[in-house]
Image (cartoon, rainbow, N blue to C red; front, side, top):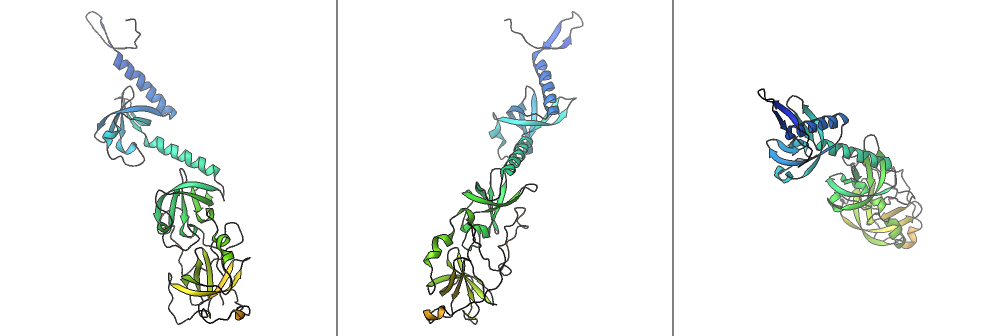
Length: 339
């Protein structure tokens, strides 16, 4: 009793003038006006899923609204029945004024929020920052990491100080990792990352344990006519120049070989080694040995996270040996080979 209702006159009796009222129609008309206003202002509407129908779901706005299955999430929805009773955040994408029908999208809301999150993240990124992320995809050339709205790429060369063939040797999908921002393009929303630069430098940890005349087992990582590149400690490489290995022997990446360390330069982080004389080189001869150096180039930069085809790994045959500089985050150490 005494409640106040908003009603709509939908018919008047011609005989006695009786008014036929409808609270439901009044509510639907008021809702329709709100839907139009929300559409004009590009505002978000919240509504509850009430029913699954062919091609999507119906929601209660105070009137019925339709959300196509393709507009519910950014990814396909497997079982629409699970959505019944859930609240969706929606925007109007189509109106039928004659039939008072409305089509809505939650996917549009999610995509706009994601773009805003990406831009906010890009605005705070800086080169050399350490960021936390989650590994979301592996490719032959590297690992993609979600930084919280933007996927960055860790090229294989930046995953570890040691040489690897596939990112699965270091990380797996779902791993939480700390990575360093190597470079980024705010306009293209592309970020290049390094995992190894956020890890301890193996040269700082192990180089003091190495000494000239040191005989040890190393692994061949690269074979060329003029030099061999061997890994003496994971992340620390040495050059075996021409004349210090048997040119007629067959060497292959992954092969274990016995080497003697000839020279160690802690300033340039260069090491030369010998396979040819591993058993017979007298220690006093090492001091007389001078190995000429060749020019080297900078490390191959990580590929941009565009597509799997665009970010193909660098060829081992064409890549020259890399020499680390003296920065805090130096890559694996290599040495120059003889001409």
